[in-house]
Length: 479
Image (cartoon, rainbow, N blue to C red; front, side, top):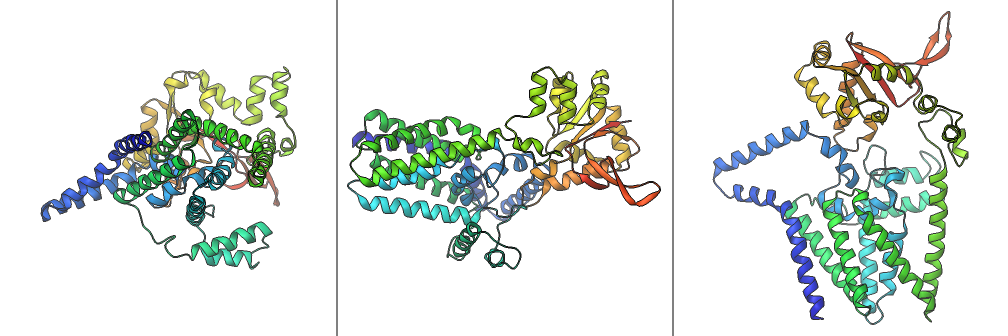
């Protein structure tokens, strides 16, 4: 027991050390507020300046914070396990961790307390509370906003569409949760409350898990407590970015499967049912994950036939020697070959690149390309030089000859303020009908009236107009 208490003290001290940096800003503001009126005015001015700076320098908020979400601070951290599991903030296979950890860990905690059964009930109450808070504070709409209880009720009642059985069940649960007192009323956007509450929750879970594993071997206890502390650091320091926690996810999954495997030897029917239930869930997950990863469906693709195939046919043809590298590039980024030939022949010119994976296709991209994925550089230039023709000429005189734009840049924006969307609109305004910006290539297709018969339309490459296929990129020459 003494060693357990010593472990607790060490972990708390280390956790406080890592979290004190988050309190420094709050502490300094409180110290200044305690002074006279002059210093209070200084604090207000500092806040105003910081707000102005935040409006201009939004790249970190747009790129990093989208992984953890834009809820109030306390909810932002508390909902992270749910967010990581169901990809509610950022979608994509590169952040998929599956549902096994979220399902298995509460079950193992629930059935693991042999002597103190009340801890099992307490564990499930905590899990349910966190689940309720997560579901109620996570975005249910494409614009990043949570749906109201009235909107969900309208949907599941069939007034705006036919709902499935699963949608009806989840919708009714959501309606009940939204009406629970305290679920959404806590602002909790201050460091001095949120981080202390999170550390308090971590401390309680430490005691809970320590009680759960106290009969295990010393090695198992140390490894488990290490994983819990790793999870805590991942929670408060990584903004929910999955790849910083790969070690934890891998080791934690191994430990969970080891624990479940031991249940098959138990005489308890409950433990045996848990073993078979977890085994079936794991098999289902592996089958779904494999199917998802080997399919080639791409929502931005014009041709959806490859979605039913296990391998991308163009890649197989390239590996078999039937297609060249240029052919493969043209298949994935159609209409780009001529533009890249010019860019690579003009080796002394510089390039502004907004998104896209085109660094791989550009010669000497490490020295020629200026990245501006969140448009902070371009938005500042546009603000400093509103005359778009003068700005284009200034960029050309500075050695920048090409501009590459990801046409889907605005879709990455999850901020409530939609700052990235506004910056992207300003970039498009800079390009549109600018005599010093010459269109070179895109894979976007536009519908235009057919010459001689306006009732019919033809499809051609272009950026501004009636969109037939949204495309992914556009390349321009500054002149």
